[in-house]
Every structure is written in structure tokens, then in C-alpha cells.
Length: 158
Image (tube, rainbow, N blue to C red):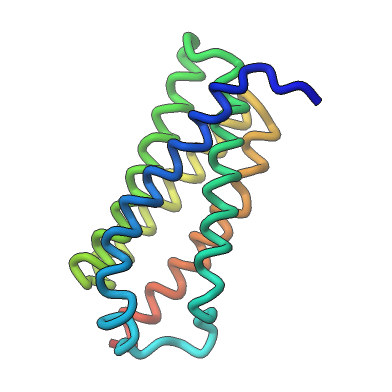
């Protein structure tokens, strides 16, 4: 299979990694201290699982972005789709700032609900341009939905 625009694919893969890097700055500061002290629900995944899951999700997000981007960016539909993608990506990074940086499970929970809505809107708009791009975001919204439940219980238990 030949990739139509390889440079665009590389850029598309890098963009979500920037959000990941921003989030990791805040996560790394307290994940080994404050986070360890929190009471967590019984269904909390083991810590080692988060890295591989998020790495996979960010790769899928990048490929999804690429599939929309190669269709063109001049139409109103594409611009709306890419705007929602940018919003959800910003919200993705903001969650780590709120949860780990500010150590506020409550603010992070409120924000993750908004993030979920932004992802759903992104999927909706991506679907209109590339069904495959939308499908690639389904694991992301599923994980964020699970993370929202986990976030709520961490807030509730602490």
C-alpha cells in the first residue's frame, strides 16, 4: 500500500504526541507520589497498562487525523472536523493538568465529561469525511469513558 502524503502522515502522528508530552509533564510530577496515596476503586487498571494504552490511542488518533487531512481542508465540513479534533486534543492534555498538576479529581472529572463530548463530536464530523477515521477514534472514546468512571470513583473515594 502506498501512502499518499508521507510527510502529512508524519505530522499527523506527531500532533497527538505533543498533547501526550504536555500531559506527561504534569503526570510525571505526581504519579509516583500523590497519585499513589489516593484510594482507588477495585477496577483501577495496573499502572503499567496506561502507557501502552495511551501510546496506541495517540497513534490511532494520528492516523485518524491523517485520513481526514488527506481529503482536504478547504471545505467547511473539514474545517469543522479539524476544529473539533483540535479542541478534543487540547482537552486531552488539559485533563492531566487538572488531575495531576492541580491534583483535582473533581475538576478533572468535570473536564473529562466535556472531553468525551468533544471526542463524540469529532467522531461525528470525521465520519462525514472518512468512516475509517471515525472508527479509529472509537477505542479512544471507549477508554476515555472508562477513565471518566475511574476518575469519578477516585474523586468519590478521596
